[in-house]
Length: 377
Image 1 (cartoon, rainbow, N blue to C red):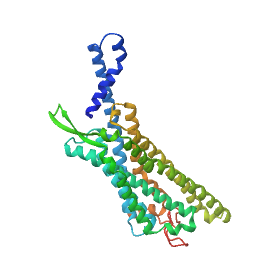
Image 2 (cartoon, rainbow, N blue to C red):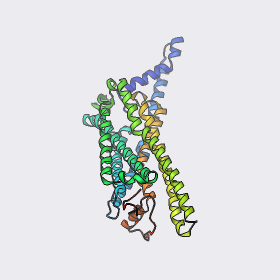
Image 3 (cartoon, rainbow, N blue to C red):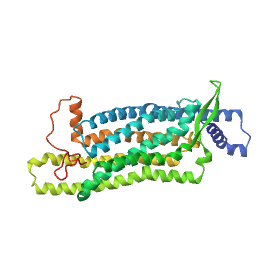
Image 4 (cartoon, rainbow, N blue to C red):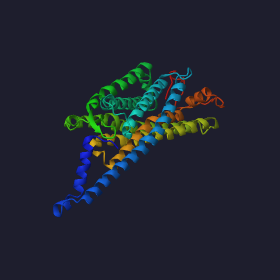
């Protein structure tokens, strides 16, 4: 397990501290004590190495593979001629952003697993390009989810002003702003790490690793920036998406209750009522998935530091948070596909599954409404 040079110094400090009381009150270290402590540090490194292999070498790659497949299918389905409208523009770019995130995340998993190339160009990429790139792509997906949520909020809760916000021009502006804003937000992260040389005794050559640039990371301004960034990208969106979707669900249930009473429980409406009832459950699932997957990553960013590389508890939480965040971007397709009858039907027709065309129109995405002719989420 190769680590930044300061990690080994930290390990020695931990070793010294573990017997500090004995050393000060009795005899100096014996060779047996030193050997025992070295074995403990070596065992800790092996345990962390195994943890990283399971989290980043197995689980994360399964999540990423499923996500890439799902988002590729999503892009094929969403670009079909029968799926037109503003809502599908949002979903197409969400799938694009998620796909790019997962592709770049493959290289991030190599770094987290500790098996990335250790040449200077690779260390430069991991120090100055990889972190801002993958995080900016993640942020753009989060911002697009916010835009879709706002679009749905105006549809259900503010229908009289819905047409002001549900149009192609606003959708393109929101998507462009999501990518541009995320890119600008993560520029300072490019200076968080730097390539650091170390001597590899096995290969008998100098190699490089991306390590914290303490001249930057220890500044209070940078720490304040990290907090501000996490509020904008993770904590803020979790609160907004949860609040808006909860409002949508409550309003939606009231509308459905009134509609059900007006139809006097007519049999012809029972199928649509069940579809709409299922939507309420799916909206709740979206809220729970977003909060559960994104909150640990937000906490992780505030805690992460090179000096915790040999902290097993932190590495366990780090692995959990990273895999949960990857799951959020990998599962978006499957969740939204479940929410839309039109997307499911297009998928079945496209891949020639035997499924009769549906005569019901999902309330999730209902094409050509009688009010304004728009496609609505």
